Length: 212
Ligand code: 5GP
Image 1 (cartoon, protein in one colour):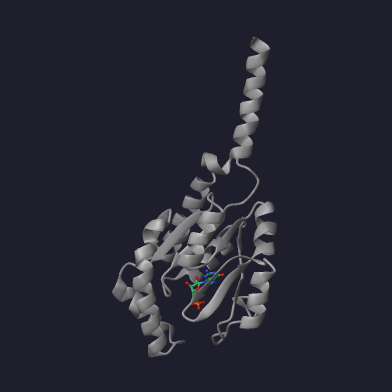
Image 2 (image 1 turned 120 degrees about the vertical axis):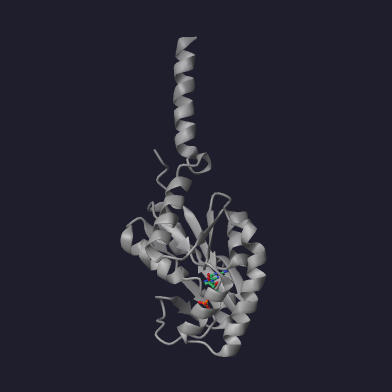
């Protein structure tokens, strides 16, 4: 019954909440998800590859892409630009896949404004202590960067109410399932099935006319 178009879904959460692992879980388990690869001016972390985790670029190219209307949203986060390239998202949604945007609060708000039928999910660890522990365990960032990310998390916690759902990432597999169920349910909302609704409505009106 659902319209063939996929859902545009935003997955946000504090840095260290485990969004990356969750996304990998969703992609591994189900074939109707696609992950949008963002463009950023941040330097690659060890092991990150251009075109896989991000498209790494410089400020000049990023600003040119903004001017050419090549991004559906972008934001400045901890001193770097991050943005979502437009073409891939449009292609994948048209192919019926649910497109995952792993982006932060400002971007999520822009997406909701531009695409009211998008689905906004906020992922959080069970506690602030657990978040700190995960950031430290990652070992890829200096204490200053970790402190900056924790301060940012405190700011971002103010924006949680803007999301449609909040999911606690305690046990990975359970969390993947929970997100999938939310997406599946969202696909059944009337706002995401306007084509079907209009069609059945027209057909019913046709019958009703025939009765007159
Ligand atoms: P990180 O540097 O840890 O990879 O990402 C920092 C933050 O930027 C994360 O919260 C991540 O979700 C967010 N982010 C990644 N890509 C985008 C994007 O395309 N747009 C926006 N608005 N945020 C992004």
